[in-house]
Length: 439
Image (tube, rainbow, N blue to C red; front, side):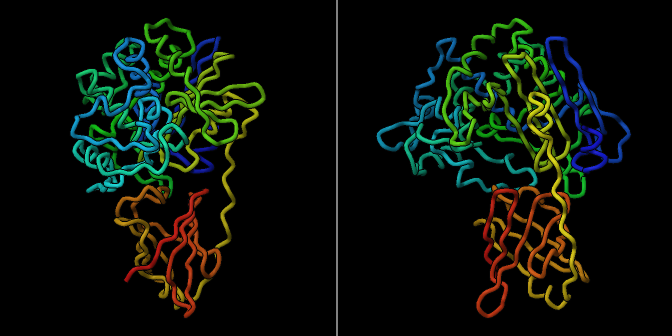
């Protein structure tokens, strides 16, 4: 599977998969630490695990609840400065369980998120910005009423858990989870020795190396953790009961809360997503940063767990590999057939050049070099993630429709009544953005 994904489909530079079953553990690795680097990956190679961090954040919450230090139904406002006005609606306050189950009513990202460096977007978001956002935000629905996946909510949850514990989030993670489970390579801040084992992140468009991501305190609990396959297998072993740990009651407590997501066969617990079909249950979470994709999941009935880590940010990631290993009825991803490239009169290309507004502070610039057309995103937007920020060539499948090789991204130039291009319709997978042309 891994050789096909890397050598044939060109979807990654390196992937490591870990399996834990009643028969034991094993690690399968294929590829390299970095493009052009001969060093192989192994179970101790370190990856950014992105949103898999949310599972650790909710485990910290569950442990605090077990210890009587917090309660799931506590309002989040209880653990913030009194000067912060946390939004309410319908007479309901946002609670800790709302944050952990993505039902808080908060959007995916705060509206005042405006990174100085889009290639390292989470690094400079501060506690003061978080407080300002919360004090000015208006909820559009009652807390607890509807699922909407939110990095903001998970970050806020970990932020207040750390405040309650009286220590930084990373120290809390180390002392309460990593040290008891002997997960010695799971951290946020890497030592010099760990940096030698760090798999370099890549982007799938041309497998170029990308920057690692850093996180300010308010959003670190949503995606800042780095880890290894061997460490995550230890985590799964504890969740599956193969190793005894004082964390077992908190791990069980994470699954005691279930809320619907609105997606068929999918519920959400405390951070974990739970897929149920044909009498089989898969408990899982995935993650992505600028150059990495991750998946962790387990089948509690058969006591099987899977970790899959990739050092390339691709659209489908390694989720399908992980799910397929947990349930072989779930198929592996098949890359879509790329459209045939057509010839477009170079004079027409000039009409496409310009800037198209994606979001208030993000845009796509379309430029031309000879007979080739290029697109480059500037500024941060929580959409159009697959192309990154490098200039990429876009290829015509018709006079107005273009695609990017290697990812499921389509761009359509839309003309007005006078035949002038007025906007750019950008589609990535199931998402669609209408980017207006600006002078």
